Image (cartoon, rainbow, N blue to C red; front, side, top):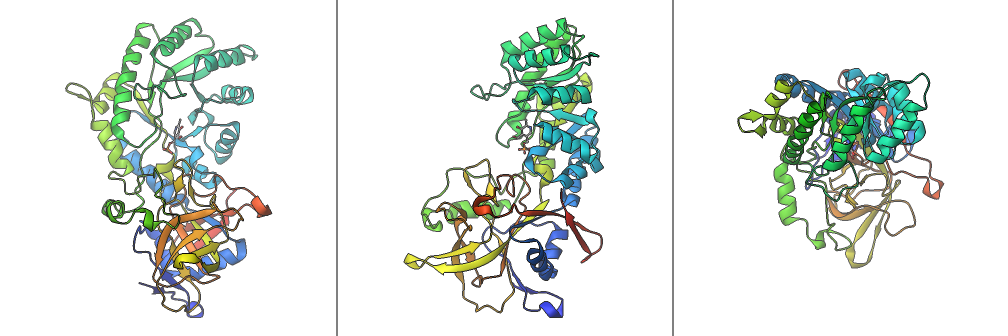
Amino acid sequence: MPIANSLPAEQLTKVHQPDMLKPLIDPVISTLINKFPGTLDDLVKQHGSPLNLVWPHAFELNTQALLAVLKRYNVPYAIFYGAKANKSQSMLGAAANSGIGVDVSSIHELQAALRAGTPAAKICATGPAKTAVFHQALVSAGSLICVDSLEEFDHLQSTVEARRPLTKARVLLRYRPKSSPQSRFGMNAQDLLDSLQRLTRSTDVFHFEGFHFHLGGYGFESRAQALREVTGFVEAAREMGLSPQMIDIGGGLPIRYVEPQTYARFLQHDNQPSHYHNQKVPDAYYPYGAELTAPQWLTLLLEAEHSPGLSISNYLKLQNITLALEPGRSLVDQAAISLFRVTRTKQLADNKTVIFVEGSSFSACETWFASEYLVDPILISSHAPPHTPTQAYIAGHSCLDDDVISHRLINFSTAPQPGDLLIYVNTAGYQMDLLENEFHRHPLPRRLTATCCTEGNYAFSPDY
Ligand SMILES: Cc1ncc(COP(=O)(O)O)c(C=O)c1O
């Protein structure tokens, strides 16, 4: 149902909600879209298309929800926000405001996290590609370093030994869980035991703090199993006289983008080749209708069995082990929307319609899934369009055939017109500007930090 803007000067601006994969929307953002669509129009006129609005309040709410679970179970905990999920500085600011740490994978992310106000001691470095300068910066800052391999162990050791005065490196050892034997990340049991032996001989170089792993996929069960595996190494380390205090289980907590029933219905009835302009259903998608929210996922992990009669939460308390998490995507749930201005629509052969927008397939994509961001966009029309229902796919502004944002044919209750806006909601988790480039010399899209105090009272400032 279209909702008229309350401002008389903008009465022609109408919001058209999609009917298929309708996005779940944070209430503050929903109010902006549905009651003040003219504001979005003005922002795009001022800052260009595509335009990304990032919302720190959503990040803070997500963090509070996870913290509430950890506190309820009374386990020792640490959260490191996976900064890779989004390039926004205000997301890092929200992490600092929430008092959590940051997981960084480059010297640039490290510097950005420090600039945002995160204490160096609350920063944890992951990823297998730590350069010499990155290692040096981490050691001198006193941040935690997840050692990915024996080779990296050696490199870090020589980095520390070359420094004067000598500062110990704080380390976690990255384990490669049995469920991913082919992964290039982390160490197998033998290398992990080797690393522990080396640590016993290098107590002047390393401060050993525990273990780390990160798995693909979004199940809590695989993390529970990997955690159980790691606890064997906790015992082995203690027998060697070391004192592990932390198990860091990485990220992979889910986001629910659409209602699970909506998503199930879509998969069952509306995801055939004929629903795509290119007649091709992508091989893999993010699970947009996640059965579990991130707090439910964490609850189930804590309640999962560690050993007969002992839950994971009780194991952590009993052994005084800190559970560390590195959520990326799930902490930026609802924390951005991406706006695209329609350039024109065009009628193609076979009665197909394409909508061209100012933006590209890199401006809203599902970075890690070789498929598109599946959620339907919302249409904001600023004209009095004829009520002609239209089905169309959405293409970007480059001359490449593959520059398509939505291959899936989207149903519009009224045909989009040049100058209208399409809004993709909930794009902060890897989808918005991670892969942006300046193809055709289009400038990089602007990112604005959006805040709201009272209804309708929104403020927008550049996000650096
Ligand atoms: C080591 C590590 N930690 C955390 C994350 C964040 O994962 P997610 O965004 O799925 O929570 C990743 C993602 O690749 C990662 O590689």
